[in-house]
Amino acid sequence: MNLGREDTLDRDGLTRLVASINRYLGEPAPAALPADAAHLVGDHLRVTESRPMGTVHLLDGLWRMLGVDDALRKALGPRRFTTDVERVLFALVANRCVDPMSKLSAAEWATCDAAIPGLASMDDDQAYRAMDVLIEADAQAKVQEAVFFAVANLLNLEVDVLLFDTTSTYFERDTEETGDAAFRLYGHSKDHRKDLPQIVIGLAVTKEGIPVRCWCWPGNTTDVTVLPQVKDSMRDWRLGRVVTVVDRGFSSEDNLAYLRRAGGHYIAGERMRNGSPLVEAALSRQGRYSQVRDNLRVKEVRLDAAPDRRWVICHNPAEAERDKTQRDTALEHIRVELERIKALRDRATKTSTKPAVMTPAERARKTTATASGKPVEPAHVKAECALRDHPAYGRWVKQQPSGRLVIDRAKVTAEERLDGKYLLSTSDPDLSAEDIALGYKNLLEAERGFRDLKSDLFQLKCRISRL
Image 1 (cartoon, one colour):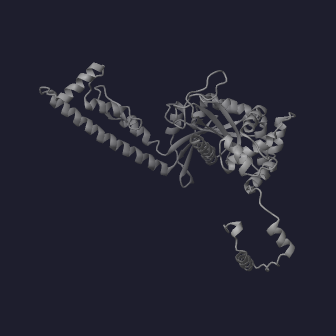
Image 2 (image 1 turned 180 degrees about the vertical axis):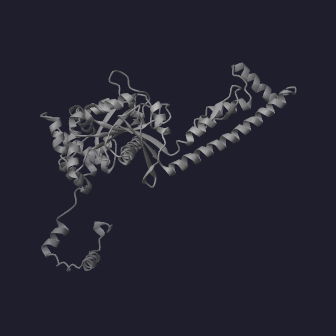
Image 3 (image 1 turned 90 degrees about the vertical axis):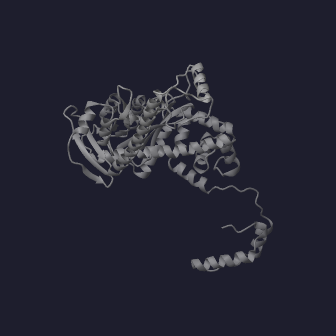
């Protein structure tokens, strides 16, 4: 409640308010303060500084409960620092939780705007040095391991399914880094910012969405190359029997074989349009679906060509309807555009039989185009090229030997049988088809973690850009 300025408070009004609250709570009215206590409060105390500490106090309690402080001190080793590195790192984490800022602003926040237990003040140099020390000391992810197992014990987690995915995040800088240790490099941007250098972030989470471990790679790293490193780096964590769930970008045969080392298993999304004989055989196999949820049906397939591998076709009726609607909309647009192109071609054919009479403006445009070396193309030719190369509509048309465009009916028929479907494969012989499908759907938890992380990163970028 906002009760107004301290120097203008209505003491009688506050007394009546306290009495009303006590009556509501069923508490007896408080006895009057002794005269000496009232005199002490009124005349001899003054506020010299005020910082909020509730949220930070709670975070510090969780920090210690999970053993992050002990794990950091163990990772940092016996070296002595003039600054308590563990407290500086806690201040940065608390700032990210409460009000994400840049390192400079976070140092000011920890010094002036928050009460950090054990840390009276800090500056941005200490923040950067603490992060450098942490990166150097935790090269083997010992802090991440200690924190995860503390969380696993606290929440009674069973790590039987490990979900893994990657994303990228870009940096607002003019060009990429150079040299052998270059990290911020150009690559395939999942933020659609191929003009900016980036890094690649990998995240493994449990099926409940609890983070297990994260990785960072240079921005030009491809998904298919990181899975062996992830598998090897998790080997010493003694997680027991783990089924790793990966998306289509990681499902190369080499990666899947690597995941099966040392008794491991996988659930992998498969690319349905890559022409693989096994994928085609699995999709063409007849059978009845089993209902798992209102929006999910599954069908298990076994192939003689791959006896150690199980296939599960998943079907979402709502998604199938959405795919059909989007395709019908695209095809209708293409039909209209093809009719317009045909009309342009017919008009060009009729006018070509007549003497060419051009206006001075048309003659000037033709002269300019000829001088620049650019061919003068009819309008219908330009429209055909634009439709053929369109990122959304071009997939539904094909070019005949005569150069004319028509709707690719074979492609439409092939896509119709994939409406609302996705294909999974697994090496685990014991999981049910339902568990396989739901395990893959839980991969959305990793994507949700990325959205949360990148939301904070985006806010931080916006704050920095305004400085």
